[in-house]
Image (cartoon, rainbow, N blue to C red; front, side, top):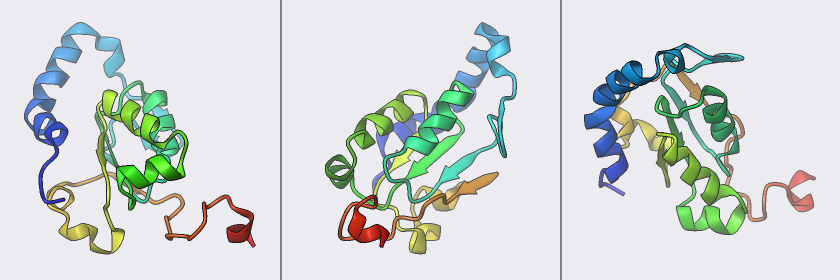
Length: 143
């Protein structure tokens, strides 16, 4: 867990280059897009993602996810078992430029090797993962 994923390391070194190349190629795609309280210009952290569907929805609305970081308490293996679309959603987020981090506990997030060096305009904690024994949509959990 202490290693910087290749995607993060690459993105840290190439963001400025990518932005200037994108500006040259497609000036209209650089326009600010808003979705409710969120802007494509905001650096947004998603905490406690389950199947990554909310962050993916926002990435699709923006047309990119270069400004997004999505985290989950679960490992990638657990997400694959719990959510039918979780892995594919995370993969699409990464393809759109999002940094996806697994096994991030919000209680100690301020000490995370990558997150502690970042600043965000918005932090989104929609539906905190509480570690239920059954799937979150199970009748046993809803009672």
